[in-house]
Amino acid sequence: MKGKTVLGVLVCFALSLSVYTETQQPATFHGEISDSQCAFNVHSLTKSHEEMLKSKSGLMGSTRSSCSLYCIQHLGGKFVLASKGHVYHLDNQDLPRGFVGEKVKLRGILDPKTDIIQVVSIDLE
Image (tube, rainbow, N blue to C red; front, side, top):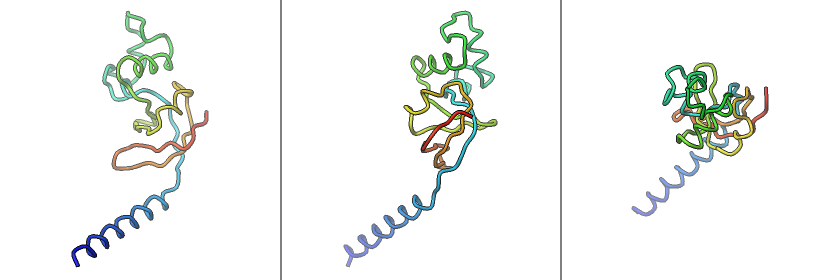
C-alpha cells in the first residue's frame, strides 16, 4: 500500500510539471544585453558601464560591449538582459555573446521566482 501511495504522488508530481511547462509560452522582452557586474552594481555605483569606462586603467575598453566582455571574462560576470530598471538572468550564456551592448528583442520563458529567462531567440531591435 505504501508503495502505491508513493507511486501515485510521483505520477501526480510528474503530471503537474508537464502541465506547467506546456502552458508557458515564450514572451518577448526588450532591453540591452549587458553583464551582471555592471547591471547589479558589483563594480559600478551607477548600474552602468560609464563609471567603468572612465576608469584610468582603460582595461574595460571604450564601449559598452568591451566593458561587458571584460567583466564577463575577467571579473566573473554573466550575460543578463537589462530592461527598464529590471535585470533578468539568462540561462543560455552563449547566445547573447553576439549581442553584447546592443538593444535587443529577446524571446524566452521567464521563471518569475528566479528572474531567469530560458532564452529561445535574440534579435536586434
